[in-house]
Structures are given as structure tokens and as C-alpha cells.
Length: 177
Image 1 (cartoon, one colour):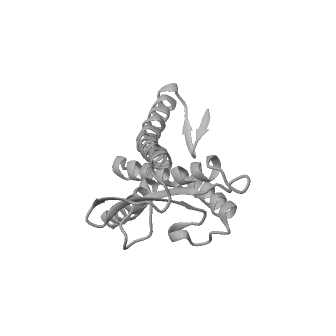
Image 2: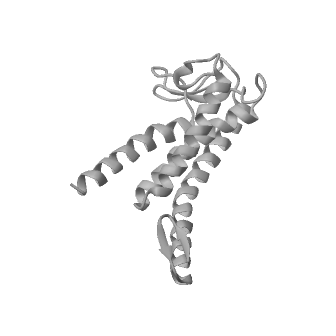
Image 3: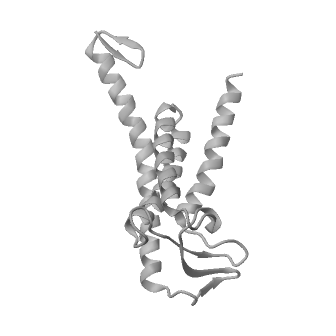
């Protein structure tokens, strides 16, 4: 007899079913995560290759491309705390993954993946981009609305994904009442 998450499993078909459920959860989490990371890192690489600091490229109305290196958190807050911000983001990604794998709703799980992709997209910058030592790299931001702090695709994923997860979780909890 094998114990899995407080359930007593006595046959192979139950084990197989649990593995299939976990594989499906991982798929619904990792596909959006990987898509967000890919789009984020490709757009940041293009921004680094094509944009010059303080030389914005106007696109449409107030939207322009304007590259900056952000050592802080959102809106450049805590710019001298880069390694700590990176450490908190890594811990947050572990927590997000844990919460996501407890989720049974596919849509909510996918939005957890979008949030995770946003967190990891910026963590990759802090690890891989040159900076002040380990976890000291700066995040590449380049989307400039001129009336809002400059941001990147990972930030968009976070701003869209997190409230959506919260809404879906709220709606799910409310339906149980």
C-alpha cells in the first residue's frame, strides 16, 4: 500500500490516474509559463540589440520604445536592493508553483502559469544580465507609455495574470458557498 497525499492507494490504476492528473496540471502550468518567458526574453533581446538609451522610438500616440535598465522592483522602487528582490521573486515562484499544483481549474492553472512566467522572466534578467554580482542584474524595460513607468512583457503578464487568478479564485470560492 502506497500513500499519496493522504490517500491510500492499493492498485496501479489509481497511481496511474494520479500521475496523469499531475502531468495535465504541469502541462497547463508550464505551457503558458514558457510562452511568457519566450516572448519576454525575445522582446528584451530585440530591445537591447535595437534600442539606444535616451533615444525613444515613437510608435503610436503615447506608446514608444525606450530602453532602460531597472535594478529595482516595480516602478524602480528599491533600486539598491536588487539581490533581495531577486531572492523574494525566486521564493514567490516556488510559492506560485505550489499553489498552482493544488488548483483543479484549468483556466486558473493557466493564469498561474502566466504569473509564473512574468516572475521568472524578470528573475532571468536579474541572473543573466550583467550587474553587481550574483542576482544583481538589471531588468530590461522598454515599453514606454510616457505617462506610466517603463515596463516589459513580463510586467504585462503579471499585471494581467495576478488579478485574473485572484478573480477566478474568488469566483471559485463563491460558487462553493
